[in-house]
Length: 210
Image (cartoon, rainbow, N blue to C red):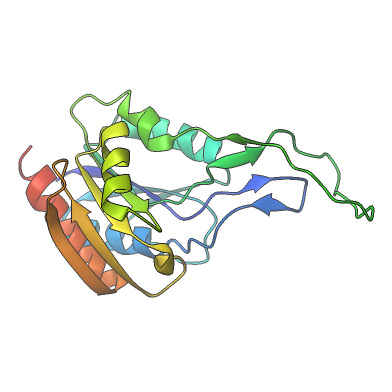
């Protein structure tokens, strides 16, 4: 039995007490992969951003809000895990400063200065010992090339490529790539079904070979 860390859902980077930057990630794929891993007999910890779904009862869920909080929670869990499936869609940018009060309209344009948030997968890769890592790459163009660049930069063992249509949708289409760019699986359908296909590849290529 493996202990698997799964990141899931979006993160929020607040501009003021009520407004934030985020995306429409629903957490459905993270939930479906957690269910597939539990059904395969593994222990699962999910670090999840704000979502409206319910994760399987057998899963330990660590709720977070921001990208920084997600990274901190993952750091605490990752050392005791056998592997990571990074499904979450954390915000890549945050405002340079957060207004202490709600920003009011002034009749003028509002200019925001954004800075990059930490790269969760790359940061965890710098701390890993024997753990395996699989990540998702949502790309709108040059999907294979960009996904492989991410795989190499983040020191992953597998990468799952999808497109913008997957966000907040019940169905999806993905390809699972190895470090050489080989397509190990081309899957389409409801996210629960696709997640089972993805996890079969992870089980065969990463878990059983360790």
